Image: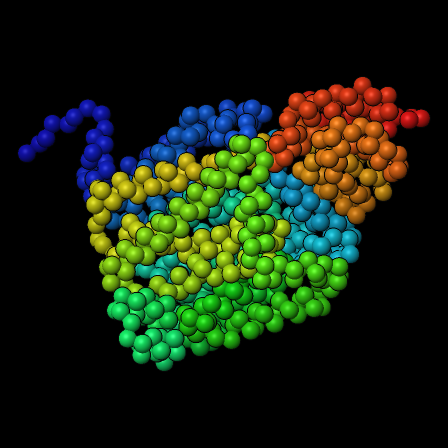
Length: 608
C-alpha cells in the first residue's frame, strides 16, 4: 500500500533511528551542506571588529549555524541501527577543521606570540646548526625544535612560520587515532567510542595544540596510554592488599563494590600479541618517553604520574615502566638540562607540597581582568565542571548496568591532577591536567548516553545527545576563543616588527607595551626586550624617556594587541592607552619611525 508523500522534510521521522528517511545519505548530505555553508560564510568574518568576548562576537549567523547542523547530522548518523564508520569519521574531520581551523582562515597573520618565539628557536637551529642552552630555556629541551628544523629544511621552506596557521588542525587530526584506540580498549560499543571522540573535540578548548612542544608530546602521551590500554591491561593476579583488608572489615556491600572497582576490578582482555610484539611495543614506549623527556617537562611529569597510577592500581602489566620513564627523565635533567636547573632549581622545587599556593596560581589569579575576561574564565570553569559531572553520571549509570571494569579510565581521569601538587608551571598546570585527563573524562561522559552495548538506540537518546553536544559546542566558542581580541595580530603589527628587524642593529633593545608582540621569530639571540606596561599605566613619559636614555639603541613598539591585552588582563582603559600614545607622538623627546592604525614604533629624538 502506497503512502502519500508529505511536502517538506519530516523531522520527526528523521530523528527516529532506523526510520526509512534516516538513510545513509541524509547525514552525508547534511555534513557537506554544513561544510559548504561554513566555508562560504567564514569569508565574511571581520576579525578587526572582535570585542572583549572574543571571536564569537564577529561570527556571522551562518558560521554559528553550520556546526549545529553538523552536530545534528552526526547524532543522526550515530543513532542509526547500522553505524557506518566512514560517515562518522567524515563528520569528525569536518568538525576539527571548523573548530580548530577557523582562525587560519579569518586572520591575516598567525596568532599567539609564543608561535613566533618557537619559530625563532627553530630559525636559530637552522642558522647555526646547534642549540645553546644558556641563551634560552627551550634549548634545554630541544627535541621538538630540532625535529621542526629538520622538517623545515627538508621541505625547503624559509622558516617554521609556515607551519603555524594550521598546526591546531594537524595536531587534532593526529590525536584522533590514539583517542579512538583508548576508547576502543574499554568498550566494543561503536556508539560509545565515536560519541566519546566527538565530545573530546568539543571540550578540548585548552589551546595547547599550537606550534609547540606540548602539542606534539601530548600526542606521544596519548600513543603510550593507548598502547598500555590495548596490549598491557592488568592481567589475572592476586587481589590487591587494599582489597584484601577491606574484605576483612565487613563494610557495607555498596562500599565494598566501590573499593573493588578501584583495586580489584574485572580484567579487560588484551589484544592478541606475541612476546616479541610486546617487547617491540615496550621499545616504542621507551623511545617515545625519551623524546618526551627531551622535549617537554610537564608532559614528562604527567606521564610518570599516569603510568605510576596504572601500576599502583594494577591496571597494567608493564610494572617496571614508571621506573624506566623516571630514570630517562632524571637522566635528561641531570646531564642535558644542567644549564637551566643551575639557575632555576629553587623555582622548580618551591611548589612541591604547597597545595594552596599552587591552586591560587592556577585558579584565583586567573579571575582578574575585565568583566568580559572574567566571564570567559567562568565559562571555562563551567565547561570543566560540566564535563566532569557528565563523566561522574556516566560512571554511575554504567555501574547500575552491572559493569565494573573501567578502573583504568578512572585512574587516568584522576592521576594528572596530582601533578598540580608538585608544580604550578606558571599557573598553567591545572589546565594541562584537565587536558591530559580529558580522554578518560569524555569516555565516561559518553557512557551517560550509551552505558551498555545495544543494537539500536531510542529517539530520546538521540535527542539528548544532540542537546548535550549543542550546549558544549556553544561553550567551546567562548572558552577556546574568548581572549581572541588580544591573541590575534594584524598585518600592520607584523609589519612593525619586520620594520624593527630591518632597522635595528644587533644588541638593540625592544620595549613593548605588553607581552604579546609577534616577534623573536628570527635572530633570537641578537636582541633583548623589556615590558613597559607600568610606565603606560602610570602615564610616565618622563620615566620612559629616562629608561631609554640609559639604554642606547632602544626602540619602543606599541600595538593594537598590546592595548587589548592590557584591557583584558589588567583592566587598563583603552582610552588611557590611546592618550599615552598621543602624548608620545606630540613629545619632542620621541621620534615616530613607523606609524599605522595598529602599530607604532618610537625611538628617542636626536638631542633629547
